[in-house]
Image (cartoon, rainbow, N blue to C red; front, top):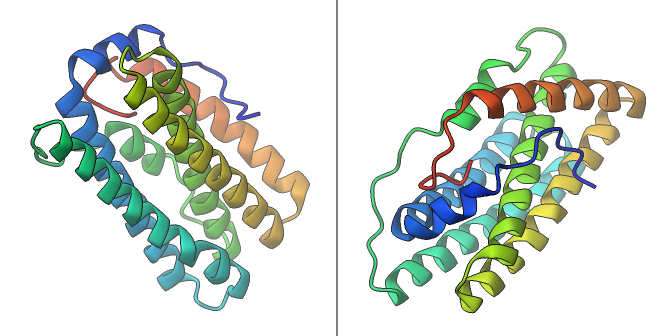
Length: 193
């Protein structure tokens, strides 16, 4: 369904399980950044009424996810650490086409959002299936379902503002770029991406 061309190395879950405080911290900040990205989309494209209508609830949902992860950190007696640079997202943004029309730039932003949600969904799925803690497996299953919905929404929004065949062509290019990025990023258990 997600179309990712390079699955996450299965060893990642073991690394994440051994770095629970760090992975939860990174997850919390990923949710916070997702909310900020949605706010930014609305600020940049207030004239796109459907985008505003569909993305505004995601802001609330992503901020709620941040609070859920924070509650999980506190419940486990762990601490929210410092936010770290997200090499994955930064690499995606570096490949974003900045030229073209306003709609071309919107397409890039929507597909980057879709890609981040797809990779998060894939990683949450792994955590929901492989973590030894049944409570965390359930916790991450809920996030997986949510991210799948967000991924789909961003793809659908892209097809609202650009022809489906153009979206599909650029999406395939992004999937190839993303696989190359994943090959270059060090496998770490303290990062969601």
